[in-house]
Image 1 (tube, rainbow over the protein chains, first blue to last red):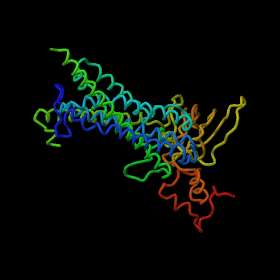
Image 2 (cartoon, helix red, strand yellow):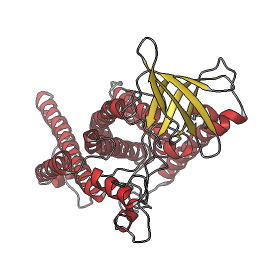
Image 3 (spheres, rainbow over the protein chains, first blue to last red):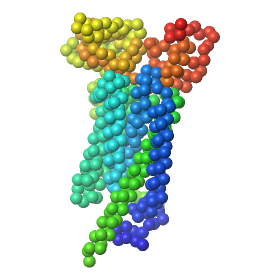
Image 4 (cartoon, one colour):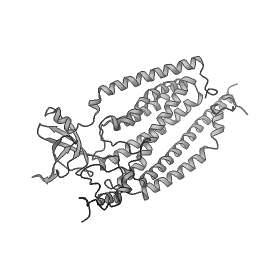
Length: 249
Length: 182
């Protein structure tokens, strides 16, 4: 069975949207279920059983939402930029779809990161918001997401929208190292990273492990949501193409 | 990769153009940030304030650690809380006057950022924010570290998380520190 819009599934993993639909069909639901289970375990562990901080008390538990959201917002933008490169250089048909569907998810993560950070800042620092380099660069990332969401939908020709949004996504990549290193390059109110690739975490292991499980849970759940959104978008296009084929002679 | 993503001449051309654009953009942003780095800094350290005193009318942010034993609190005639404390960066210290409620995380030994004016003698703050460091520690560990006498939160940041276990074992030669239980 083949459809006029897409070639039949080929053997290559980078293949067509049809190939993507075929491969991801058995993946989406298990990924979502496992993600939700890991997330539930991490949240129960972090919010219920991990110790309170010696000076922040119970408010430290906001970390179990705030840090995964910051990670997802950054990782999501890397994905947008990668899709942008694939769209512009290889004109890959899937990249535009993934970018279209990943944008709102990443924007949600960035917004939740900013909101939870603000809720954490008031009891901790004594203010909801300051214009320090970390907070401002994260706000810029949120606006980059909003710009991408609007740009990719702003053209009648979806391919033109995808190319314009791809340029924006690639240009916005400069914000990622600024977010990452802002706390080292400049004096900021935001503290430096507690978890780095090179050094031991500066937090108790009884807080680090639930944070890691929460981050894994949010990442798996987010990946599942992205897969489901991409599949839905592709299937919608396929039904539209079929309907068009039926009404046109 | 090469089998799946063949780089034909046109595609390679597009790839290098995009890479060149990104490098130019990154370089431009880097230069701008470098030029603005003194403006992007959220606060000035006491030694910077003393070395280059700002004009008394200019509002600046002063950041540093609250010196142990320097905090004096009281109440003004209209019952607003008042506080006076010294802020240091290890090289110099500036005395801060503040009227208002201090944030929960404020304590001696904590890093703070004060918004206000420096008149050449002292700093009058209109807002005081507490800075948190990157260490997260359960209360039991903090208590054990203080009891062992190896760390006093009034005199500096907590030790490395990797050392907590060895540090909380009481050492026979170490006299009990100021944080020790009576």
